[in-house]
View (cartoon, rainbow, N blue to C red):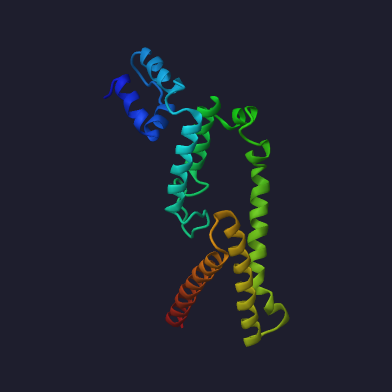
Length: 209
């Protein structure tokens, strides 16, 4: 339990405390407490927009660094990772501090967001995702449509490696990592997954036989 003066002192020292006050709401008790906390959040001297934006950007950089600055991990963290829930929260918090806009439509009205950034239809996203996965699955299979045996296998490996290299290059454009790092990472992850899949299939096949 803290008094308003203590909340203000802590918020002045730590942007994360100030951020928690942005989301504060009264569940029960004296309504005067709402006004006291609102006065802290609305004080232009306490974490002015420029300083708050810089603090949020520093926090975002540190948080993203923990997840290799990419949303394309094999097991992404849906809360803390890039593009996760915390990214959406950060947008809302900065909207509140910079323009008093607590939701995405209000942020568009205030000129903080481009309307196109709100996204499109969920059906469109699902269809495009399916098409992308289908295209990706076609690469390793394509050589078998024109050849067979060892030649088709080698062609499949080369086609898969080329596809993964393209994905790595595209990923590096968004993460800021080097292309070599991103390509190598994609190849190693896929090779590990393929090896495990082959090993399990070989083991199960031997057991069933």
